[in-house]
Image (cartoon, rainbow, N blue to C red; front, side):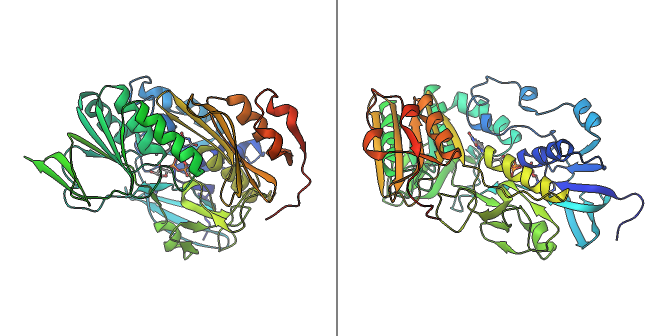
Length: 424
Ligand SMILES: Cc1cc2nc3c(=O)[nH]c(=O)nc-3n(C[C@H](O)[C@H](O)[C@H](O)COP(=O)(O)OP(=O)(O)OC[C@H]3O[C@@H](n4cnc5c(N)ncnc54)[C@H](O)[C@@H]3O)c2cc1C
């Protein structure tokens, strides 16, 4: 399929993983022509501030953008914006893609970094004016002025993004309620102790948290949302509703290519290689083996900047013919107003969690263990603890659970060689 005008590498999806992948290609010495195609009108930008400082007006749009046009020119990367790839096909040696504007791009190597889209609420009234969600800069631009003017905000979904927006709304003086369907906040990602501590921290700041509650209907007047009705009959007045109930991976192009796709994403191996053995995929669109050797066995999809960056690097290494397994310790952060959460490792399957510090004072760390082996840390307001455990995990070391609670000894002094065997 390849022709003389064929680019070496086509990267579809100009977000965190896409920009990391093209950067890594050049760092790995690849000099062939690269085209990076994005659906959004902006050049690649960072998403984390969109639910945090950007909503508070602390950034101008330009400061979120990773690189200017000169950077792309220097790297020999052609950036296409606002023109999504809509059809794609390939064989083992290359293929061709068509964008929405009708442009044809032929390629030798292909990377899919298409990210994810927010899940819709799917209840009556979800399309009313005043109902928002945030994934893109355009979403945040629409929400920011509404958030500043809102009096009664209902956030549907007690995950990271929902809680970050709730904290921002509360800091701006709104009356804020968070509606969460399960029995705890951040339930998919953190330990129950942290869920409870986060709930108390938000309640201390005046946010109302409703667990085990489903939004079943949104009502409005003159097309504008006025309230959220819950499954127990409660009616929450709202002039602004923010929906943060998770994201679905963008897998349509992978399906066109006949790649193995699960509901959680495009299936990749530890080298970010998809089922056809030549296309790579990375970031929010992909599901792959747990990269953490102390994690639970099985596949997982992580939605985080470090994961997208590291998996994209593995994808670039695969494309240039030097496959390197992606096996980094996962780490995350979430700024919820003045509350900073930092996490490393994965606490799933923990059989013991040691509390170190003062939970009520919002200065504490939770160290999780499975079979006596340290598997994760969650810190609030103690970055030194977080860093010490992250480094210990990266070096294959541990911290004895029985000594971890003693705050008179810095955690970094308690790091020891791991006696336990790998449990994965
Ligand atoms: C509001 C918000 C706050 C977040 N905060 C944090 C945080 O604090 N810490 C953290 O670690 N992570 C955070 N994340 C998660 C993190 O931003 C994502 O995990 C990361 O951006 C994933 O990178 P990605 O490249 O896979 O996807 P994205 O960055 O979403 O990029 C994918 C891009 O592909 C484009 N695309 C899709 N289909 C096509 C197509 N057919 N043609 C061309 N382009 C296409 C999309 O438009 C998108 O621009 C946050 C995410 C959001 C939305």
